[in-house]
Amino acid sequence: MRVILANPRGFCAGVIMAIDSLEKALELFGRPLYVYHEIVHNRYVVDRFRAKGVVFVDRIEEVPSGSYLLYSAHGVSPLIREEAERRQLKTIDATCPLVTKVHLEAVRFAEEGYIIFLIGHDGHDEVIGTMGEAPDYIRLVQSAEEVDHIDLPPDAKVAYLTQTTLSVDDANVIIEALKRRFPRIVSPPKEDICYATQNRQEAVRDLVLEADLVLVLGSQNSSNSQRLAELAQTRGCPAHLIDSIHELKEDWLKDSDTVLVTAGASAPEHVVQELIEHLKKRYHATVEERFIREEHVRFPLPRELRLEVISTDRLTRA
Image (tube, rainbow, N blue to C red):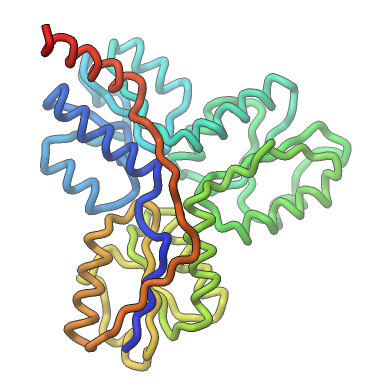
């Protein structure tokens, strides 16, 4: 067996920042420490922090007054922030800056009187947070077919935004449908689908033609991981999204001489390496790592943590 290991893969800058933020918060504040929603959409990451005593909640009412609460990488709506303030929670904002960018665009477009079409998946944490910024102005669009049923005139004052973890190809289909329906539609100054999502899709798009099978490491609730598997399938290659080797089915590999391995932006590298080692031992696989694009993006820790670190250092020196 020949294994092609796609690069870039795995953790993006936003995920690294969010995970580092939670690690630092545990170090500084101890337990109990609460996180609104999963810190990132990956079972192994969430389970590891849960074992350390982190409590993940889906309702702000579950957090005792005065507690420390960290917002996940997917962001939250203003209503959640207001409720946290009412409950006197000490909040740490680990929202990915690229998600924050979409939130700010939503606010700006709404203030300028635009009806905003948000291209994304209903119920996704990021979409819920973004729509909460301007609920009276934002309409969710999930497919090109939905565009035909929008009840606005062609000359309406409209703009569009996108969830950061979408399929680039799928998003473009919806964007083109919106542009045909609303020729004067306004786009964000810079596209919203994040660099890491695009880069991982580009790697699969470039390498899938060499493969008989694609294995994507990532959790089922990870949007960007799902898109990688779907992208391979649309290119005619069987693909499976798995959390780890424990979900691997040997039948998938029966007729696969070349396997492409990649990982979503919230999947840790150790699950990739466990899969690689299994393929080496079980199938005597040779591994070829292919670099499609380099990534050098880094995000700082949230301001709340940076200030706490400075304060702690000062007390230590004193």
